Each structure stands twice: as structure tokens, then as C-alpha cells.
Amino acid sequence: MIVQFLSSNSRFAAIKYNADKVSAGKAELMSVKNFQSLSVLDRPKPSDYRSYLRMIGTLNPKVKNKQLHAVIMAKGHSYDKHQLTHIAWLWLKKMGYAHNPHLIYFHNDNPNNHVHIVSVRVCKNRKSVESRYEKLRASLALHQLIGFDPVVQAEMDYSKAVTYQFATMNHFIILLKTMGYSAYIKGTILYMVRHSKSLRKVDLNIIEKIIKNYKDNTFEVGALKQAIELALKVVSGEPVRHPSFWHSYLRKNYKSDLSEVFHDKLNIDIIYHSKDEDVNGFTLINHRTKKVYDGNEIIDFKRLVRPLFRPEGFFEGDRIIFYEDQKRYQPNNVPSLAVKMSGGASDSENKTTRRGR
Image 1 (tube, rainbow, N blue to C red):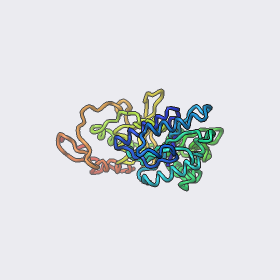
Image 2: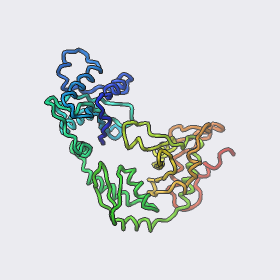
Image 3: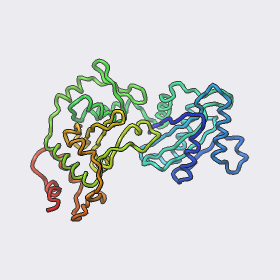
Image 4: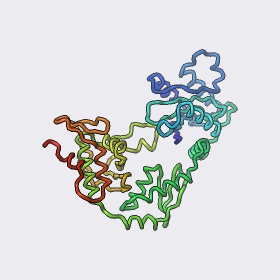
């Protein structure tokens, strides 16, 4: 579960944004508290809430960015709308907003259940809500509420990461990024960081030893190339920006139809790399065999990202159906090739190469 701060401007545009989501059937207003003077209205309008928040904001002219707009997101559907609303209310109390007017909206426009919280950073006694180390305090407060220990989690994630095989330090850092960590190196130590807090020190000698013991596997590389070539006949590998405009981490990342298929069906991550909004490479992580590859080992990058104008087939569950002959191919046969470390071609491999005969 994560918490993310959004725009803090003083126009309280978050009210309209969430109200529009409600009107579109993509959100639900779950909680409204501390709008005392609006209690005389049977059905307050979004503009009423907005005016009230702006009025409270004027009580302290020194606070320039008066809007609080935050999101608390769970993984998948692990928490329902009522649980998330309750967590949001407890989080507001811990952050100093218990007596401030606020609204909580549940959104259903994302595979991960989440709530949007809108409030004002000025209290009715004209004092401002404490904002120092806000992001760090927000994460710590949320972790306390759900019983999450980030240090213990970092230790578990580190233990998992060092079971992978990779050829460079950059590959290890990319692997950590997929787990939600940034990293920096100082001296002989790599620091795993999340929410601006260093959670785990890693001895670089351990990582260098893993890199030194890395061995190429031409069979797996060939199988992955075959899997990508087959899938590119049906889905595009052309990267696009993640549609989430409010989550800064997601907003910086690219994905494609191909990367989604590989993640969902094969447990393989395709991570696109960009610089100055120009996508210029990719890394592939096969979680089944626990190996990290430079993308160019598998397939030429220009071939991967080439637009697909006329798909030759489509996915039906875990199968690919090609239009020309309606032959069915099981994508789940492909990772079995990637997992296999020795020996000749399997029956599933022969099936994927007989297309069109």
C-alpha cells in the first residue's frame, strides 16, 4: 500500500476532478466531514465544498499551497472501499487533519483499489497543518496503520534479489527498482532507498561476486527471442507512457501491450529505459529462471518497438489464434522453453515453428 501527494494549489481543483469521476461512474464519495455550515443544505454541490475549503484557506494568507490532495492505493483488491476509507480517515488523524474539512472518494478506474483525499492545509484556528517531512511522515503513518515494517520488507526483498543472476551492477539496480526501491552507491556500500529513507545497506562485494559468477545461457536467450517474435505478430512492443497522471513513479514509466502480456502470462518483465522522454533501450527480467538480461541480447530494440499496424492474430485467454489458419498456440509453452536449460527442442517449440506449413 502506498500514499502519494498530488497538486497542492489553492484553487482546489481536486474537487472538480473527483466530482467528474463520480459523474462518470468511476468514483464514489465515501466520506464528508467537518463542513459544518454546509449541513443546512440537503445536497451540497461540488462547488459548495470547493468554496468552503477556499474560505478556510483564506484564514492563513501565509500558506500559499492550501490544497491537500492525496491518494492511498492498495495492491489489487486486497482492501475494499470501506477498509480504504477507514484507513484514510485514520491517516488524516495522524497527519493533523482530524478537525479539518475533508472528503474521501473511492475510485474504481484502476486495477488497484484506491481513495483520493481532499482537504485544506489551514485549520479553523488559523494555524497551518504541519508540513515538514510530509512525505516521510505520510509513509510512516500509513505503515503504522497497516502494520507494515519497511525495514523487514527491505531485508526480504534484498534476500530475494540476490537469488537472481545478472551481469552488471546496473541490472541489480534495475531489479531493485521493480521492487520499488531506488539505490545509490557510496564507497563499498549500496543503499536501498524507499520514500527518501535508506532501509538496507548492501555490501558491493556480494553483488560483484554474483556478477562474476554470471553465465550466459544461449538456449534461454533463443527461447525468449522466439517468444517475443511470436508475440509481436499479435501485440505491439511500442512503448507508451503509463496513463496514470497522478502517480509520479508510474508517470515516468513506459509500458506496451507486449510488456503487459509477458508480465501477466509469462511472469517476465520488460522494462523500457528512457532519457529526456526518449525511449532508448530495455531490460528483460525472467522471474521464472531468475535471470536479468540486457534487452539487446534478446532482440534488436528497433524491432521490438516497431509499430504493429496489422496483427496476425489475437489472444484468447492463454492462447494465440492466428487469422490465416486458426491454429492455436499456447503462450504458456513459451516460458517452459525459457525455463529449460538444456536439451533439444520440445514439442511446444516445434509447434511454434510449424506455423503456415
